[in-house]
Length: 285
Image (cartoon, rainbow, N blue to C red; front, top):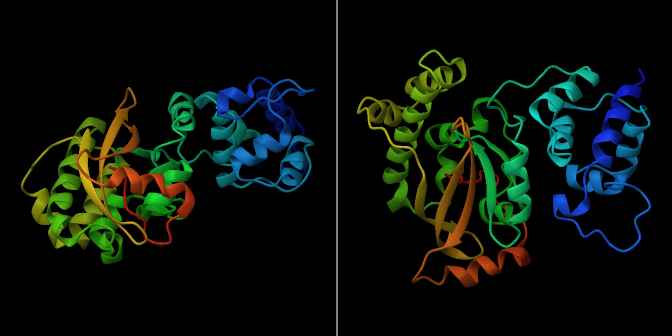
């Protein structure tokens, strides 16, 4: 199957973006408008050869994961993202999942946060995209699917998900997660199928969650001070700050060292350490 229209669309979106718009250095010799093909490939986590094939309208059907990465790399609007999926013959991803569309403004801010860990999550605590420092601090959270894409879900169903928080902090984190989920479910709508299914599943699987849910505590996580027990750095105490989208369904989180601690020096080492080794990463908010 040929994907001629898909290739033409990708090329048109690539040519409208300046390198500095996505955190790249323009350089003195650029013979093409916008981004180079290899730059888009780099931003999307693909090989240059693969992306070249896509723009030629050749090759195999791109996966939903690749389409989501391209939509973010090319700063597509929601309508453009939907059009991209249709050109590729793929169904639109369900709202709230790990392939949900990230608002281009949040993607732009994330790109510019180069010296601090940052990531975008949904109101149900599904991580959508991380910068390299967030991966180094929190672990790569891109590999989870279905219910387990939500860290709040994993927190109550997978004991291994808690190991990067000191045990003394677990009870407070549990209460905070439940209060935040109650606020998110009320803001969405009582009949929202995604939130309702997540909560019903947690009530059935976790006695701790069910007990906390029955307390009816409500509180949006707008900011936190938390301790992260990093395997290489030890305990890192950080402030987790939030910027919410207009509808409240997405949050840009960034992490700063807590004043009066030695965390500033530890965070500076993240770029040297590289991706966190834990297979069950911790959440951002």
